[in-house]
Amino acid sequence: LTIWVEYPGRNVVAQIWSIPIGRVKLYALDTNIPANSATDRMITTSVYGGDTEMRIRQEIMLGIGGTRALAAMNIKPTLYHMNEGHTAFLALERARVLMRENNISFDQAAEAVKTGTIFTVHTPVRAGVDEFSIELMDKYFSNFAPQLGIDKRRLFSLGKILAEDEGEGFKMPVLAMRMSNYNN
View 1: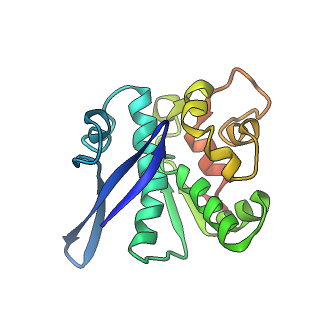
View 2: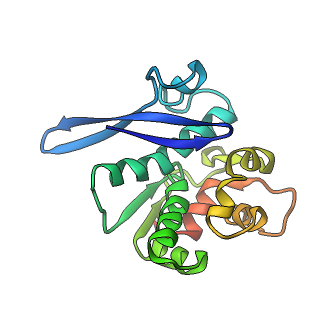
């Protein structure tokens, strides 16, 4: 079973693996498949590996791709738990899907996403915060904002402490907190 996620100028495909661990199934996404370029095959090769651009690629696959993988397997969670902000893009994908399926606005979808989302942070220090430049966010999300019915400025403000600060980068834990009803 595979899913795909849009990246600038291409789609990246991931194979879904099911790994039994005792009575629990762990699902993993694998981009190391022939359908992808050599660079895209590296997205799921290692955790915390590479530069900032590789990190955003990994977190897009984890959040958006992970949400799509659950849908492809017909798994419908009633509650999503985001850890450390790494999966925070799942909130945007969930909002996009809710908007499409229910013909609702982004604000309505964001509220619905919040009610079924918990965020936990273990390392609330600067070194533990994944932060992306607005230029990098623009490169990877310029086509995603219209799908949410909002402009890029509003989308990027969801990951900023000070929404109007043009110099502030996009912080994954800030997005996670804004899109969660409960923060731990």
